[in-house]
Amino acid sequence: MKVGLFIPCYVDAVYPEVGVATYKLLKHLGLDVTYPEGQTCCGQPMANAGFEKQAIPLAEKFDERFKSFDYVVAPSVSCTAFVRMNYPRLLNGKHGGGAHVCETAAKAMDVVEFLHDVVKVEQRLGTFPHKVSLHNSCHGVRELGLSSPSEQHVEKFNKIKDLLLLVDGIDVVEPDRPDECCGFGGMFSVEETAVSAQMGRDKVERHIQTGAEYVTGPDCSCLMHMAGVAKKQGLQIEFKHVVEILAAGL
Image (tube, rainbow, N blue to C red; front, side, top):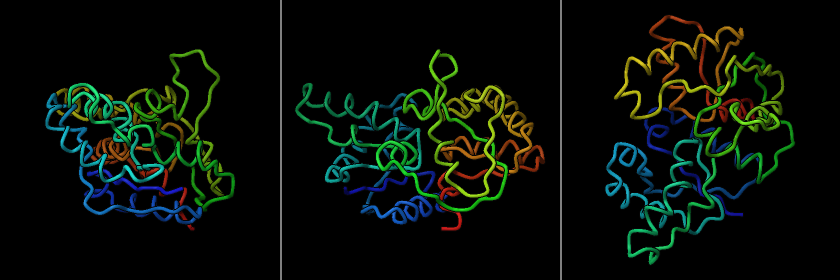
């Protein structure tokens, strides 16, 4: 099983430690993982801003760069969801409705779902003796199925929590309204600043009410938004991507 590691722009530029932790964790589990050089943005920012045509060349480059791998794994639910949900439409529709066949969308996976559903990790992982509040990012809940959406009458599950419970010493809790948006939403935080900020304040407050020392989740963009809110308000709580916790102490 050949795994291509995709590191999104904001992880590479702002949270490189998350990319390193992802690679470290995959290697620790004995996987054949490669970080292809020359990879760029997946095109999500352009498409979300209404400029889908500008995303097509990036999608083509991504498809070419990763098509030889069995799985494309990324520490980002939003980028993974964009590739999986939008690439077939963007690429297959470009050349007369199907001349270009997208080869990567079906095998693009967030690292959490890859470890949970494909690798089926059961071994004990790292050590993290802290109380951690779990953040369920919207793309993860409603597009990738990492956890059960509260608006549906389905049996509750959470793949992120399942993996975190493999870490020694951890105490995992969830806030009230566990799958409500933190307010980031990419372009939403730019276009609706006041609403986004209030949603962030509400979400951070609910995480703090759990008594947790850390907030964790599968997407750096949500964590970045909430960390900014916490810093502005002088709140004493820290934020870590889930792979940083899974890889802690390995």
